[in-house]
Length: 163
Image 1 (tube, rainbow, N blue to C red):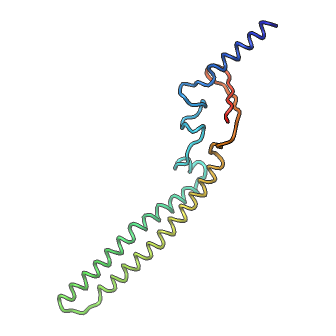
Image 2 (spheres, rainbow, N blue to C red; image 1 turned 90 degrees about the vertical axis):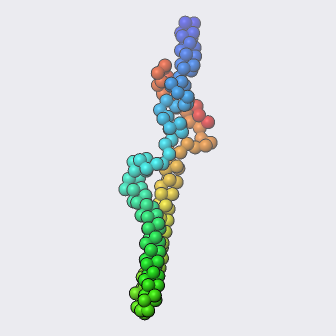
Image 3 (cartoon, rainbow, N blue to C red; image 1 turned 90 degrees about the horizontal axis):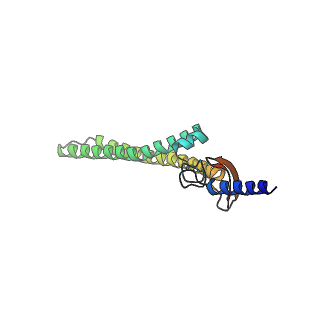
């Protein structure tokens, strides 16, 4: 009986001494990110978790930003071209109003692209924020939660109490 108790004590001590070391200094054996098993929501993780919903939200955000940057640039270029057309007509003594239409069209293009781009951008970002909240509620480490994990390591069996 004495040998059995001595063997169990030796086994317990040896397992506890080397169960938590796995080659790098992370408390969990399979923790490549260093976040206690939690991988942040990036593009690949978003596609794996939410699929086409995430891809659509990212696409909306991308096209919204594209419309916000390219639309006003195009509208301003059209307005400048229309202004230049008016100036050249005035210098030649002609009274054609071709440049005025370009200025108005440039203003319309600018306003429409800003309105549409901001709407797309906000809708996509709102959807991404909702997915991030859901992802963090499911997978993020709980700051005041405790857990007890048992698992095999290279040196034996180990228990990890996290609190």
